[in-house]
Each structure stands twice: as structure tokens, then as C-alpha cells.
Figure 1 (cartoon, rainbow over the protein chains, first blue to last red):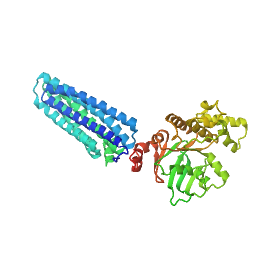
Figure 2 (figure 1 turned 90 degrees about the vertical axis):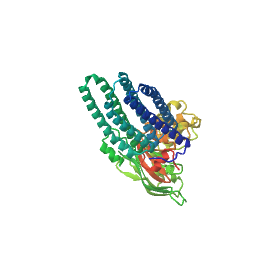
Figure 3 (figure 1 turned 120 degrees about the vertical axis):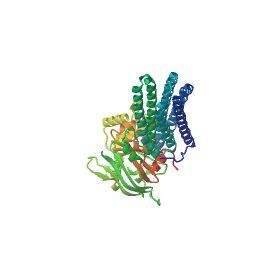
Figure 4 (figure 1 turned 135 degrees about the vertical axis):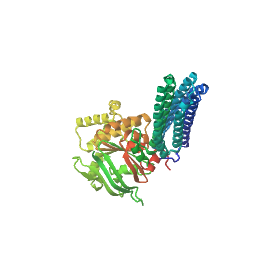
Length: 234
Length: 261
């Protein structure tokens, strides 16, 4: 992993700038997810509207970072670690943008639920826990990206199993609710869509962790078994 | 996979120099592939290249250790070219291992004569035969269409890029097996550079090529293998993709990503 200074200071500055833009974009996406979940749980339509409006900010950053990367490729022809960093950033930005879309999806479900004015606080417990885990994953993932910490990245990938388990439990729970009271099937479906969105965010967070490992180790680790991945990181 | 040449443990000291300029260099030149040598100025790339057809020995007193094996024409065995002594053997060697220099070096004669000159030295005398070779070499060097109506003009009237391709045609005319390029495009504009690069990728089908270049993107574009040299040592040699995407030695990575020093 090359962290030494580039002969051209401008190059280092450009890379730092694009890197900090990615991290800000990640922070923004994290906020969006947080707000969307709060809107869902508190049936807050106004907050959900804010999330939907703010998605354009995520999209704008996506476009801006792509442009910055294009410029670096054209002007600098990066190689080795520099090249992998730019590739990792382009892919990460794409995943972050899609996570932003998932947050917007949750906000839409929040509006749907809020308009029905149903009170079902007990149903929100499990999605709240799942959301907390996903936010934690993304937070740790962004931190690992900033520090190029592959052990942390691997630990986040492993942690995703818990989110998958949460999703499974939530689905089972909602099916029970639906069977108990078919009048509330609509609400359960809204929750399941939201949980599905969270589960996708978890998967996309894992993608970013894989790019971090690719960046540091120079090996593409997508689509390989977790045991092989662990061996590589060790 | 056949190696056309194999540099094995070559240590080279210039005449009168206290220290060797190359230390224990290992380098295979695979048949019909392009091998690039990169590294900062003074690292020994050109010295290594010039050892590979013993062009150093135009001046006496240099000291070689190790071996540079060249595959015999029957492809059965190798000959260590460092063992060659007779003048005739040297001429034959430089015919088999041709060299293109940084600056185009056309002879002060016509375009056709530039090519015919070397041919006559090797005993090709028949006019028809000479003309055939001239045409074929110029076609292989992607120059024929530009000069077919100027064959009797002074070669020094051609553009820099054309002169360089003429030098390549001149080398090809002697049917070499290996062609050594010493920064062939560093004196050329970007379009002429691309024309030479394109030609090298075609020449590879018939010849084995070794190229020294300061332009790393050029090495990345046209070569199959790349060797990174520093202070007379071969620091890393691998497939070009590996060198430019995931080199294993830190010095290589520092150099190709612009962090050297």
C-alpha cells in the first residue's frame, strides 16, 4: 500500500479532495438513512419529505465525484495503488448513491404509513434494531475506508450476517402479524419493504468493504467465499 | 513459450569505471513478445540494451561477466554472445539483433539507398532482390505509402517520424530476430509516436522486441513484459499488467506512481 508523497503535490491534493468528498457523501447517506428510519418509526411525514428532497444532494455528489475521478484519470493516468484507489472510489460512490435511493424508499414507506394513521409501536422494535446495526456497519465501513483498515472492513462484512438474520426474523414476525390481523397487511408490507431496503444497504456496505480490501491488497475479492477472504486479510 | 534471448547474471563494467554499471541482471526476451525496460535515468537500461548486441564493443575495454544467450536459428540451442570475438561474428550478431536509437540516424543518401546499403554488405547484390526487400521492409515499417514516390530523394528530407520508421525498415531488411529499441519515440511528436507504437505491435508477430522507454504509459500500452531497473539492478520483472496494476516491490510502485525519491 503506497502512502508516500507524490512528486506532484497537486496530485496528492486532488486525491485528498476526492477522498474527502466520498467520505462526506457517505456521511450524508448515513444521515439520510437515520432520518428515514426516524420518520418511519415516528410516522413523521414532514421528515420523510425532507429525506426525499435531500436525495438530490446525494445524486449531485455522485456526479461531482465521478467528474473528479475522470479528471484524475485523464490528467494523471494513475497506476498501481493510485489506480485502485480511483476505481474503488468510483465504485463506492455508485454504491453510496444506491444506498441513498434505499433511504428514499424507506421515506416513501414512512409517508405511506403516516397517512394511514395507524398506531403500531410494537411492530417497530425489530426494524429499529436492524437499522441501528446497518447504520453502525456503514459508519464503521466509512471509517475503515478513511484509514484503509482491511481488518475492520472484514469485520463489517462478517457483521452483515446479523443484519441478514434480523431481516429473516422481521419477515417471520410480520407474517405472523399479517395472519393475526389481515386488516393490517398493508402496514406490514410497508415495513417489510423498509426492512428489505435496510438489508440492501447492508449488502452495499459489504461491497464497499470489498473495495477497501481490493484497494489495499490488490486482489479483487468480490464473489469469493468468506473463508478465502479471511485468509487473504490475515 | 520460447525465450529468444536470456540475459543471465550479467555484470557489466565500462572501460576504466571503478564500479560495474549493471549487477547480476537476469532478463528473458520471449519470442514474439515485447519486453519493456523502465527506470530512472542512469539506472542502466540503455547499457543493458547495448550489451544485448554487443554494440558497446565498438570501443574496447569493457568488462562482461555472466551470459547473454541467443537462441540459434535452428531453435535447438543457445549461443552465449559474450563468447563472440571475430569481427564477422559481431556483424552477424548485430544483423540478428538489430537496434533502433533515440534519434533517427538516416545515412546521408537516398531513401532506397539507406536500406540497400546494409543489404549489399550482407551479399545481396541482385537488383530485383534488393528492390523487393526495400519495398517489403518499408511496408513492414508502415512507411511505404508515404515514400513510394520519394525513394530516390535524400532521406534527410523526411520528417522525424518518417526517418525513424526508415531506420526501422533498414533494420528489418536484414531479417533480424530481435529488435532493440532505445527510446525510439522520445524525439517524436505524439502522432508519430503512436504510429511507431502501432508498428511495434505489428512487428511483434515476426520479431522479438525489447524496448527502453522513459514513457511509462508507452511501456504499459505496448509491452507484454516489463522490467523495472534501478541503480544497475533489475528490481522487478513481470507481466506488464502486474507491474502497472499490482507490482510486488515497493520501489517499483513508487516509481510508476510518481513517488520516487
